Length: 434
Image 1 (cartoon, rainbow, N blue to C red):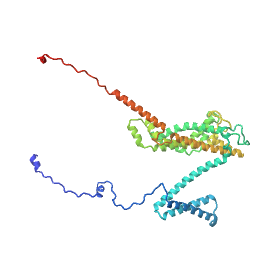
Image 2: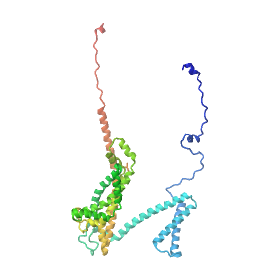
Image 3: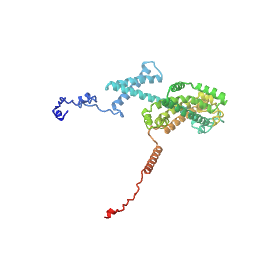
Image 4: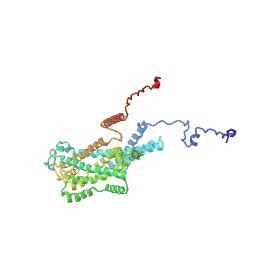
């Protein structure tokens, strides 16, 4: 085709379409539909951190009215009796009255929100009240023994059921509990976490079998664990009750709890973190050690706490495997070693009031010991991923400085230094002289 023919071609333009309006353009192109500019007046923003006078009136009005109606029902109108029944009836009346008061000036959604908030808060208060009641009941019943210093510094070697509370103590039981739970933790923590890592990072057909066995062991009766260790270890190996045998029985009870809790926690680690680590060329072991486990550290500590709470209060397996003694024994492989749960059982079965007081005092010490262990565990690994302590931040800063110095020194070595080369001199030729 020649240039003249190209010039003769006339280009016919398509008729221009009308421009789409602002509201129709995003819809036609598949984008986001924008709301109209004139949407009317918006309601006042609700402050979730504060309660209004109306909310307080509804809450306290329903509470007082429910208490008054429950008193009328139990004292005048019906033959109902009992403090527990009164509390249940009063609470049900309170929920109904509170929903009615909120519904007078609110929507159905607000009523459901307020009622569910009251139910959740009530559940938390009930749980906290039960915990406080258990602790205070043990402290009050055992205060006669706990207030004596010898209760924490002496053993029951030279004290009997008829001796006063100023003689004897539970030092041997405290030491035995710490030794037994320490051995059990040394066994269950690496084994439980390693099993959870296998279930999540390796998997396979055998992982399903292991998960099924762990689930079944969570419902294992504690007396069965004690009988197993007694028949397998004491009868055939050691031929005597010992603290190590008790630790093995406690480990059987703790291990499935730690495995299942750690398994759930490791499942919550984002898969993107593993993929990013593999993309950098690291191995599976380094990914688990440097990415997965640090990310799930707080949850793994919670799993260990749950297992410790299950094992430290066991009495049935310890009764069959550790034996009862009134003397101090720090050798877990030789001789009986008593623990606090077993010491409580031995105290409270006596008909003497002083022994019963010692039993409740030992129970209070056991509760405080568990709380102390939980507090220490939270301090060790309770921080969220990415949150470093002051020492960790200083160590990370020092490592960054060392890396910067190493990179700077490597750069200075790799960069070639310029060398001054002499300028060559050219001798004149005979033609130049001519």
